[in-house]
Image (cartoon, rainbow, N blue to C red; front, side):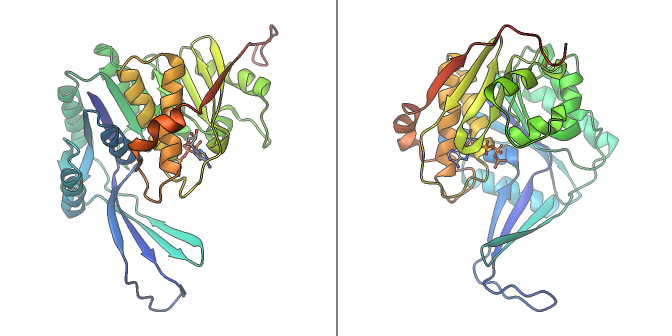
Length: 321
Ligand code: ATP
């Protein structure tokens, strides 16, 4: 089974408003409210791939119950730690082709709640093949909390796919118990390694991935939107090309990619098939309006069009030597 972790899920509210006006009353007819958060997108795509999963994290109050109810309706198994303080709303106002967002920060977690969740997490690990951890942490929680989850998984020899950014990711990379896989996009990679400039060539990418920060991380998938991905898999480097596709909404494609990676790793697919699976779930999400949604019937068609080339590392010193 795959265990997905979403520490600060949300109720995502979308307000399409044609002529949005500031400092005035705006009325909205077609509101949509859905359970959101990167880890929940991952969960939906794993579920649509017809794989066993359990979603966990922390939810609170009325909004927390809404999130759980929605997972029940889509028959996604979940076991969240419940608190009283409300989970957050994330509001997107869609106006004149633009999107104005208001993101609540969510509940502030106490030390006692943090410990209680850690116990819950520990108790859920039996029978788990792969853990995915997505997104940021709620307020109040130890900023090194993901390292505690890595410790628990290390004890049970369970691979962790960590899709986070900034200090959460950096702290995990510096921790002795490493994630098995990370999936930064290009911006996140540049932020991590203080790279500047827009373009990174294949050789630049190899050098960036030789940064000491990535030592002992078995798999690094640098996702690059329509340009596919660049991957370090153990000692091998791969450039992954994808076909042009009709794009409907690319939001959440990174989460769909993590879902594909988790499913493939659970099934011990070869590195090349794992990358093809991940690119395919990413593309399928991009082709849909709904975030965290894929049409599995199109899977084989796109899987067969992913092209992977192994890149031989030039025999030269690293910029980090
Ligand atoms: P997000 O933060 O929205 O979840 P991300 O920045 O983490 O996304 P991307 O690199 O944009 O992730 O996309 C992940 C994968 O989804 C890509 O590797 C690719 O397979 C697919 N994808 C994303 N955008 C496109 C696109 N415009 N055309 C084709 N495939 C895409």
